[in-house]
Length: 180
Image (cartoon, rainbow, N blue to C red; front, side):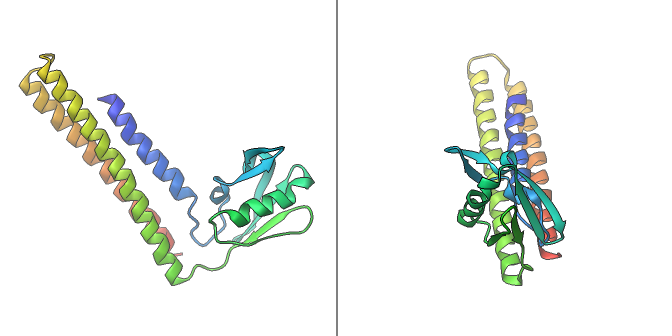
């Protein structure tokens, strides 16, 4: 049972990490978490080759540890799906985030809902796998019918708990996007 709960928890952890990369009007260094920069021929996380700071509410400043990486960082941000245009001053890459439009907010809210639904699918797949494993144990005579019913009930309670947690994450992030 704990293996399946761990799978369900991992779905929530992944969703939380995914939501951290969605910007809500103010600059958040976590939106750069998925960006990879070519560093000596190897795709490397941006945070591994540069320092990211937030000098103003809507501005991120990326200071590479090697000045030669400025162009590579700028290019990596341009080809990403962030929808922002980076500038550089020779030493730093600066990203200015525009105010979110109502249309963009609605798009982000849809994306948040979609990602939440995907996490729910992962949780429900874990429930299905747990139920199948319990039924196999029952058929093999390892557990009784009553134990099977109790186990299925526990699995459903765990599923409901995790789905409720996902719903809270969806609501929280949607509110954050719509009220900024």
